[in-house]
Length: 344
Ligand code: SF4
Image (cartoon, rainbow, N blue to C red):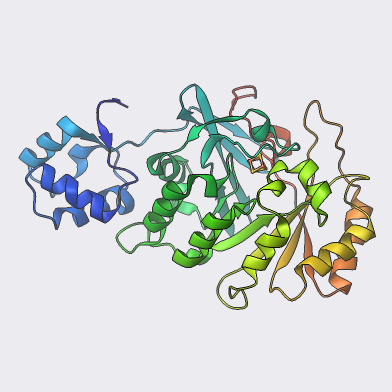
């Protein structure tokens, strides 16, 4: 992509109106551009054939569509596919496509690296290298080979989505607007550690599903696993969530990765149930995927089942999330944006 040209992908209708104006087109041309970008999904300005040749020539001097194909595709034995894209600076980013019976979910990245520093996460270990633009986010959705078949999007890839709030909100607008991809917000889930102010904004201005990374019901222990507990205590996040309605369209879930001897006993299950009691929510129990240079070990399957059953007995809906793409380093916490795997 020519770095002197501004990408059109990732622009809202309002921004496309300014583009139209800048090349002497009437404002309604913005709707035509949006249709070419997000419905017809063209990859170059020449393909926008209902804009005059003169307008297209003027646009090409200032703008580019901004679509970029993945640089690398890695396939898992279970059908999961991981895609490597140019990210920010020298750091690449990854998106993961997870097929599951009648669903095809893309897990998108929102940042190159992450500044939250969770000790169990490969992305967190590499530090922060920059925010992705809305173009970078939408490009992941449109440029994987299975794009047309996608049914769901989860913001659970590299980065903390609420640490890049403006780009996230703009991406959600494009994904859900009638002039954009026209997806229902029920097909979109944003996962977060719970940055309070930004979480409140997300809850106010969108209807997407929310997933909160919890991992421990105890503040001191969560702080060891997730240093951001100091700034955004889980109790405050949950207090905020109690003022919103999750009984109807919008879903709330808590992510709970299970480590052997750390947070996998029934005392934790009881405390977790007390913490979220009264909220319309579910708890996703996540199998830990061993990462290099870490003392953390995965909880055993019988332990996870016992934990799940205890939560269910206490009235909290809990499920063990199936592990996908572990063999290609595509599972939760394993994304590193590196070309260290085998290409197929
Ligand atoms: Fe960032 Fe999420 Fe990894 Fe924590 S788990 S370091 S928030 S990417």
